[in-house]
Image 1 (spheres, one colour):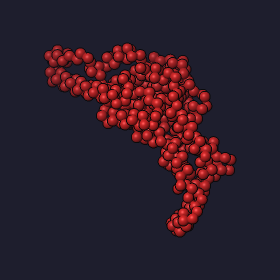
Image 2 (cartoon, rainbow, N blue to C red):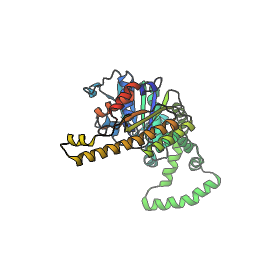
Image 3 (spheres, helix red, strand yellow):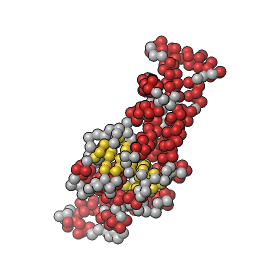
Image 4 (cartoon, rainbow, N blue to C red):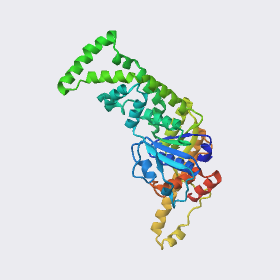
Length: 381
C-alpha cells in the first residue's frame, strides 16, 4: 500500500526511526504528498538540526507552523491542491507556552518563568523535550486547523522516551521527591535542614546565589501546575493511541537500522500504539534477470580500456552483492514488522537536500503498487 492508502482516515502520522535513514526527509515527503492530494497538512520536527528546512529549500523554520507557498514547488512536477505548513519545535519556548496555559494565575506564571532553576532546567528535565513535542502535537490537533499532522521524531531510542514522556514527566511532578522538596515533614525536614542546608549555605557564601531558596520556590510553584500537567499528559497519551494516529517506522536496509526498526516495532506493539507500516530508504534494487556483463563489449565502449572495464564490472558486482543483502533485509523486515509490502525508496543518485529530491521521494511514497514497481525496476542493477 502507498502512504496515501495508509493515511486514509488518519489525522496524525508519527515518523520514527534511527538516525541517518532519511526520517526527516520522509516526514516532509509524506506531508508534501498529502498536501498535493488536497489536505491541509502541518509537518513538525523536534530535531534541532535544519534538515527539515533544508529539504523544503527554506532558510529557517520557527516554533509556529509556516505556510509553504505552492509557488515554491513550481517547475518540480507537483501541484499542491491543499496546503503545506512546516515548523521546527523550540522545546524551551513550547514549555514556556505550556506553563502560560496551565498556571492558575498570572502571578504564578510569572514566578515560574522568572525562576532561575526553571530557566535552566525547563529543557533538561528528563522527558521535557519529548513531552513538549507531543504537547505541541496535541495543541495543533486540538486547534482544528489541520486535516493532518506529520511529526518527525528523534532517533528511535529517543523515540522510546517520546512514547514514555507523558508518564515520566507526570511521575516526576507527582513523585515523592517533589513532595519532600515542596513541603518536607518529619525526618525529611530534618535531613533537608541539616544536610542540604549545610551544602547550600556553603554554595551561597561562595557564589552569592541562594540555591536552596531558588529550588524550594521552583518546586513549590511547579506543584501548582502539576494537576494541569497530569491532565495534559493523559490527553496526549490518548492521542498517541488514537485510531486516527499512525506510526510509520523509517529505516534503511543496513543491519543496525534494521535492528532498531524491529526493536521499535516491538515497543509499539507492547504499548498498544497504532502501526502504519515501514518505509525503507536507500534500497539498492537487484534486477530480476541480472545478466553477466560482457567485458570485451564494455571495454570497447570505454575506448579499449580493459582496466577501466574490469574496475567498472567489479563495482557492478559489489552493487549487486549489496542489493542481495538489501533484499535479505527486506525479507526479514516483512516477517518481523508484520508489514507484507513495505514501502521501498531506492538509493538515489544524490543526497536529498532540496525540493527536487523531496519531490522524488514523495513520488515513491505515494505511487500505486504497480507504478512503484516500475519505478523501482528503473533503478535496479
